[in-house]
Structures are given as structure tokens and as C-alpha cells.
Length: 124
Image (cartoon, rainbow, N blue to C red; front, side, top):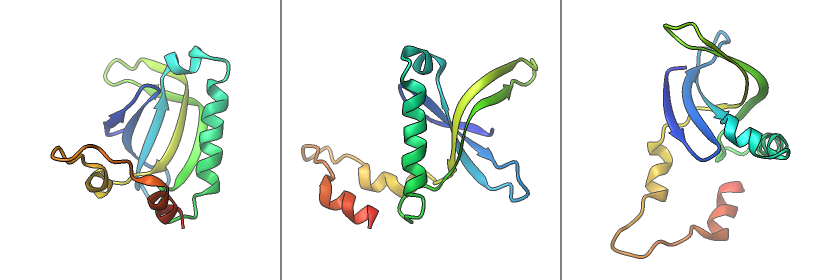
């Protein structure tokens, strides 16, 4: 992993390099232990998110899903402490500034939802 690039209530997202020969940049979404222990249904929610991402992976407007795991290990440097059984998704890395312009709020006008038409445009 290279650096943390985002976080939310359920997970944190890190920029990393793929371990395969391509060494491409990827985003790894790691779900927090608090979220996973919150409910017996949390792991089903993660699996459902992965299934949806897998179904729409051919759409060029959606970040490509690369995989899901629940047995990840993070080795902390320099302490060498290991955190095991990490639940994660691997996605293509998309630089934040590509989408930020679409979502950047305009403080002169009230916030407006992007709407169903825009969503359908992205998914076509």
C-alpha cells in the first residue's frame, strides 16, 4: 500500500500497486472491523457490493472491480505487527480529480442531485 486516499463510515481506501507483473496502481477498499462486527449482515453487504460491481464491470464509466477477499493480512512497518483476516475489495485506481468536477458543490446555488437521467447516462 502506498497511501490512504479516502475513508467513510464503513471502510478506508488505499492506493496500492498490484502484486502481479503489471504493478498497476489499484485502490484497495478495506472494511473496518467495527462495521463488520456491527451486524451479522455486514459481510453479506460486502458480498452484495462485490456482486454488483462484478455485474457492471464492463461499463466504461464504472471503476473496474478486480476482486474480493476476507483473509487479507497487513504487515505494519517498522513494527512488523500483522493484522489478519482483513475484508477488502480491489478496484482500478481512478485519480480523484477525474470525477471531482462533477460532484464539486457550487456554493452560490443550493445543492442539486445528479438525478436518474444522469445515472442512466453513466450506465449506458
